Image (tube, protein in one colour):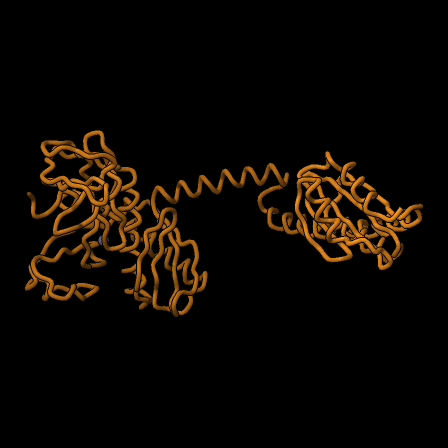
Length: 396
Ligand SMILES: [Zn+2]
């Protein structure tokens, strides 16, 4: 068993012939402890690696009971085994994590902004800085300073030192865990930063490729700064490009006009909806007048393409215009079928009780008052039957 795991000795090592020295299950989930490992367990803001033990997927890696447990998709037998690392995922983590070291160092050295937290996200990572707010100008300056250090291709190295040596070194963040014993792992960005860290890092700031600062949000009196580095930055740009092309096709405009045009379309849509609502009101008023003029105690009508709001407006207007009539109104649009039963002040029939009957006949549901019952129907196939029920309920 190695004192220093392979992922720490060489973070670029992607496979390892090793041995499963202890296997077990935790709540039905199998795990294995190996003689050595290239898989980093979760810690210091860097997520656990993924990989394969033989052909079995490693779904998590955790420190437990003084060992590194590889949580497995299926059990394995003790003995010799080949461990492979999901290298693409790991290298991405190394880029984001090392970018964080660089950002944190420059933010502190050049601006006096201290990093209080780090989060490596699925798509975007962030650090929290103890500064109330950052302007876009400040972000641009910080991004440019980081870019200069990426171009400088500064070597990044990790080493272990004794506690005595540690005390003599200019380490950025002091503060070891209570009762800490043994060697301390230091990570150095040559000429720029020296810090304690147990994670995995790229070997040169050049391997960060580029770091983009995306934006900020206030967080617990400080500022959360979102960033992406390396391959993520290129994939993110590719995503933006694809989306841009799709939006360009939809709006049929050059990308410089997207925002103005989208805002204009939104305003136009709001105006059109307002006009449509006014027209529907007018239509409901005209329909109410027409229905009120019909002979008989029961009127019924169906409206294709209308919504429940239209039926409701029509019903209220009709009840006011023709207080002696019972009205059964239905509508169908792309979202479903609807019905309203309404009775004016002079109607003696119990609209609520009749509405419940109609809802049952139409295999629907609804509710309302003694004057207006509104509901949604599964279909209007039994509309004639519902109408017959209402006719039978009215005085001859
Ligand atoms: Zn680190």
